[in-house]
Length: 206
Image (cartoon, rainbow, N blue to C red; front, side):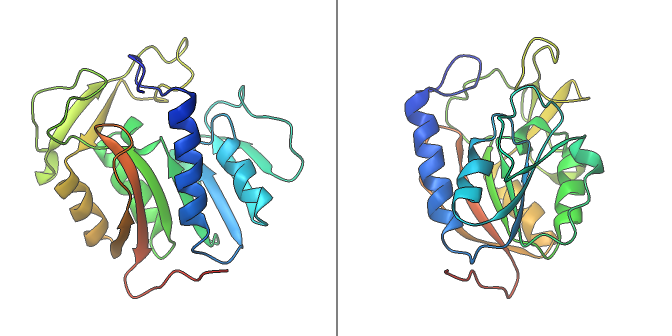
């Protein structure tokens, strides 16, 4: 069940972990960066499965103690994404502006992405969104972020973020050489996982 602040309850969190584990199992273990890692549970799950994990977040206050993982406090806009075998972006993408979303995908080119995000579909959103917009031709809606000091899951450095329509998200990925190879059933009305592979690549099952 979604909370009014846009978060999720324990059962939804467990479902997210299960879906992440399912998608992660399609790949042979290697190096992974978990963007917007937050509480670090997804990073720890990957480490449990033999991945060499870097966990990045703009805030480090929720990072657990775990020496297996390289914990990095930084702005995602400045993170070098080259050299990783897999990128996980779970609950971060919809907290970015359109420009920062496109920049992240540009910097990720050639690396598979497990993406978990809200989209502006026709279903009721857990947060208040703007009227429809189409910046740079990408249709979607804006979301006014909560206070960044008191909300640990709010955006970092931007007051508004962009929720693309599903078709706009697919277009973003397609234009940057990604095919969406799998998307799981929506676990919240506007949120689900996407497995994004560089065009021509194939996931390798361990």
